[in-house]
Length: 533
Image 1 (tube, rainbow, N blue to C red):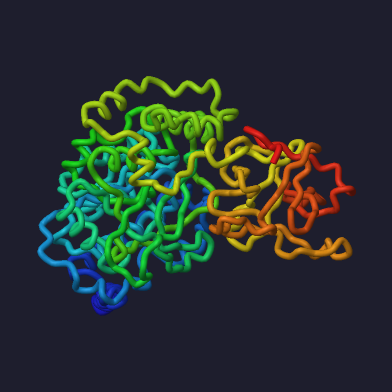
Image 2: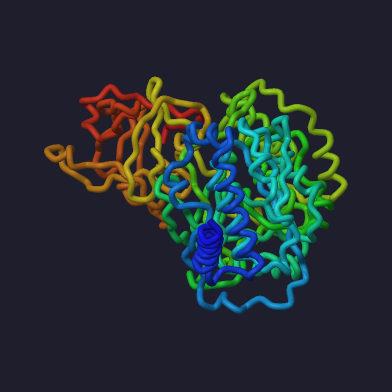
């Protein structure tokens, strides 16, 4: 028996050594020990009733079986440019990393934590704070016995992103605050560039480049250098960054940021944090972006810092009063506090969906803006978000482009992609269009274009696609459209009309070109100055 016990002990030691070997090349030895400790705690937790409930739960936003198969730590591609390596020295700031979790798949959450431990110098890490925002399954038992650097806070009441982060800040002690999602894997050398920028530019927000993790396969994809942007509907959008060289490692500015960013604690306190009236989900990144940009700082993307993020197709979160109600209320608070006289353009784009919504008392955020002597939205538009165009001065019509109960829709396609029609939802986004004084039908920087100019005998070969709008003074006829008195939309090159064809199983309909005499299709924009063009 003594010999058997000895072999069991040696087998346990061997397993530990294998784990440490697999972690070779990551972090310091202490970080490896902490990651293995989390793995051991997770294995113990998996036989508890909470773990059984978690395994039975359906995580609609990602593939939990694949995530479990991967485990709670793995290697990650190093997408940094070679010039990023060994570039950052003499960093004195220490970071508190704040993660909000609500109904998160456990292995994805723990993989986020272990990736931080394995790829972050311990000398720069004050703590990792996980705020459990009233998840259906209490993970308190899972986090008992975790390394002391990992702190777990559970709220039994649903706080939402802004207030849960505020609670995490209150429990932290680091000089820099790093806000991460609960489904990320940080890259090698991710933290040093962020802290270095904050050390030299204390009023800025520093944002890592977000590489993509597929929610089904969990494979990695390198992201190009992007900026955060938005139109008059205030929907966050990713845009390609206009940088001279894709190999550039210098920080670059952006109008707005996603929810993953770094900010000095003193700056967070000076700005008085998030608007306390924001609920659950939606708009918190825009509110903080406006506050930073208009009140003394800048949003800066840091190419040498890379964090991989699971970009989910849909939410796995619960909203006590519904997602739409939470999002609409939050956006209206931001509009009323920050857009000044320009809010009319927002309401022109999305007014039908936002009418009569009670967004609560905005006295506190307005007084903070006044006290900080923040700049106007007019200044922001001129010097920060220069691409934000005024609709009334360049557009004859805008909003939804509707035919009956269906609206023209980009169906999430980009340049070169086709378009379709979906039931109108009133929230803008893919169904937001502008009709320019040059005859363009635009979705931001993309225009409707006929891919060829067929004769009447070859109309079946004509296709409407999304293409970059021409910057020439004379718009090409393939991108020029005329809305006639019968409300038909005619392309100047093909002399054919936009029409809705057969319906698909997903509720969409195909959009095609037809001879104008053969279609009764009529179209109308939500808002029109004049269509006599």
